[in-house]
Length: 252
Image 1 (cartoon, one colour):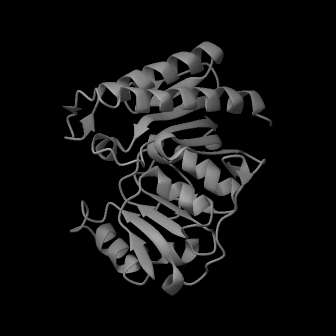
Image 2 (image 1 turned 90 degrees about the vertical axis):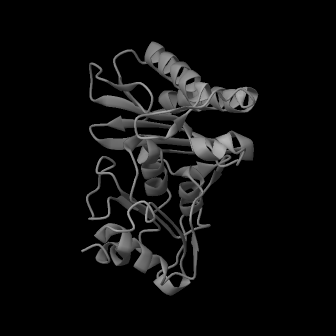
């Protein structure tokens, strides 16, 4: 199937939301959710914009947003959105915050968009049509040995006492170089071959749906830490594919 119209509409909406990131940043008005994570008026305004415009254009589709929850549509399609990924860095004026938009068809991400307005980066993919970074086609790296990996690991501190946290830390110690955080930009770096792998033990579907589509179209692979090809299990491994089974072995 071809999703050219959906991709074009979603890219335009992502860029509008990114403009709100930059225009409204001085007016943060930070609150905290039940899980103590911060949320700003900008998170809410961006999700309202994205949801309204997507559902006006595609009224039969479902919608899952970080701030507004799940809306069941009248078909097998669902838009999955994080209007401001990286709220903590955003509050500190760190430029890795992003707008994340994905379209899922029958549990398979078929469109993925990661827009980083402060870095002037837009990464996107459509199933079967490759992955692109600012208009140029991208591919994952060819790295195949853990000892030469440049990667990113997220969530191991929060889960430092769990088996998963200890296993992730043990993997990271074998890498040549490990980044602690870069938010969704880590996923862009894997898809474009700058990083080789990213493991996140604390990912929600709106955090990783876009990246799953993009990295897959860039020749890579995604799954949870146990190898299930799902964005709904709380963890995600995004890799160049060659490293995927090696990383998963650590979690067996």
